[in-house]
Amino acid sequence: MARRRAHQYVSLPAASLALVLAATACGDDNTSDALQVWIMEGTNPDASAFFDAANEAFTEETGMDVEVEFVPWADAQDKISTAIAGGTVPDVIELGTTFTPEYAAAGALHDLSGYIDDPSRFHQEMYEMGVVDDAAYGVPWYASIRSIIYRKDIFEEHGHEEPTSWEELRETALDLAEAEEDMIVFPVPGQAQYSVMPWIWGGGGELAVQEPDGTWTSTVDSPEGRAGVEFFTGLALEDGLSTTGAVNWNEIDVMESLSDEKSIMAISNSSNPKAILEANPDLEGKLGAFVLPGRESGYTDSFAGGSLLSVFEGTGNEEAGWRYVDMLTGTDLFDRWGEESGFFPAGVEQIETYAESDDPLVRPFATQLLDAGRSTPALPAWSQVEAEGVLVGMQQDILNGNATVDEATENAAATIERLLNEGA
Image (cartoon, rainbow, N blue to C red; front, top):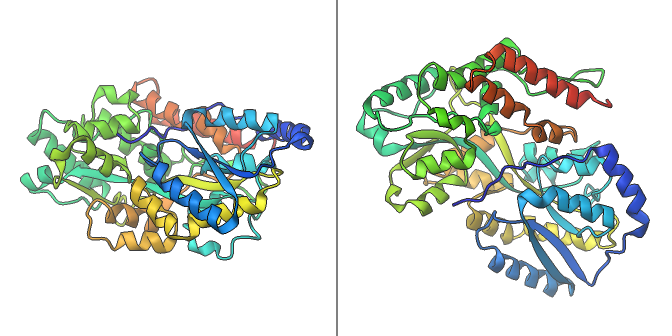
């Protein structure tokens, strides 16, 4: 099974983090004969061979040894904050795209702008997640995107093709619900915020937009945003295409419902097909994927996540840290990591190659990433929005019947604006 990717943590406000940095900067004595690297655990099921090769190549080129430590995602925030407070940060670190702005704004990360010769070679939505005040504090490493995985064999059995609009999606699902009464046609999870975002964007709403005066406004509760949320939750509440238990499902639960042959189609991560087939080889040849259809036509935008590689400030090994980052993102190791992990290398050229693939479980996700991938607002306070589970709370309130779509979206928009504008 793929690892859990939910970044649930208590965010350290940037202002507080900056104070910690200021208090400990003079005592940071982390300069070492070996480059210290922290990588999040589980992206590549067996990363030891990859890093043995990477570290050997780096040592041969620079004469410097490398020590890699794998950090569980769930422990990352606390471990990083503790390391900053103690002046024991690593030289290089993998950070989720929503982590990076927070640490960059606090002054914890080294500005890489002067090293990156061609920013356009990276997926731009991801690249912008590492940019704060026109300085780049992270290099896109690998990317993931959410599209729809479906049971191709069941679609074919009942004469259905991939839907090209929201209404086609709904009508297909309703028909399959009658034909396959024992299966969940389309799970609507309550604890999967990245499964909710596409419908807000697809309806025409925005998570947050910056006004000319610098403040942030959320249009989740606009008529357009509400239309998207209402469509998605309506698949469960009005059409009965989900299951009541899904109110507590996260992305892993959704993936397991597919691998256990309980669901027909679902919004899923681009790394999931590989994990599903590993868990259930009987599904080989029975799965398909398609880009999230637009409301009327075209595509619906989906959250483009993944990780950046960053270099900590003040370790004394900033130059060597950049050379290691450049090696992972500028050599054949870039492609190798994608092949082994099931994620996309976060380079435009690499993603374009995948978008031309003959693999039906690869091409749609790559197309989604290139043509209809979006990121959350690239500002430090967004981590607090995720930490407080604003969109998850909105979704669960609606699915549990505790609030109408209007009430839940109004509350979510107000909370997003409060969190983003505090201290602005």
